[in-house]
Image (cartoon, rainbow, N blue to C red; front, side):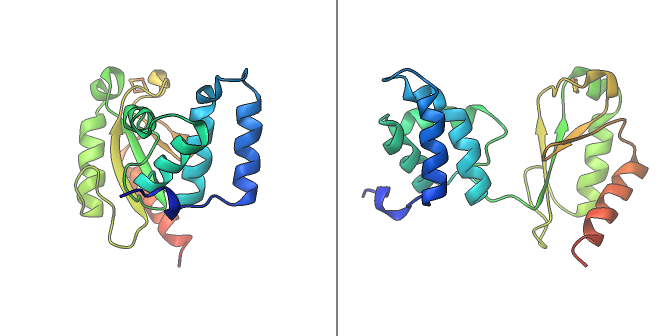
Amino acid sequence: MSTLQEIQFSDAIMSRIHEYIARYPEGKQKSAILPILHLVQDEYGWMSEPVMNKVAEILSIKPIEVYEVVTFYTMYNLKPVGKYKLEFCGTSCCMLRGAENIMDYTLNKLGIKEGETTADGLFTVTRVECLGACGYAPMMQVGEDYIEHLTTESIDEFIESRRNTVK
Ligand code: FES
């Protein structure tokens, strides 16, 4: 069954998509896939199959080519996530500086397992590869912010402050 009819991107999104595609030579429209995926993820929150299929249709490529990109990069969400996605670096420098313990502390505090989202829809916790801030280990990325030199105290503060924003 085709799912291509299930999603219609807004005129505003289509306009941005065409801007991205126009940056590349004719026939090389696939090169615009990363910013297009960011754009539609901002709109829909995650990469559902109908969304990915629609991107494939627009770029005149096979859906599998979109799935390959989406499943390769951890910045694309394969399922709905919380308002705050805590992406803990799990690579060498951060691990040597206690990232595993900080992540375990966070998961226990939130009552979820890695990859899960809290019942209130606020927090998702994931593990990612090096985020290029090794000198500030242990660290995590939340949206466009890097939160560095993590401690259990700074995790407490972070969670409390974000919870307060929705009270
Ligand atoms: S090892 Fe964690 S940011 Fe590089």
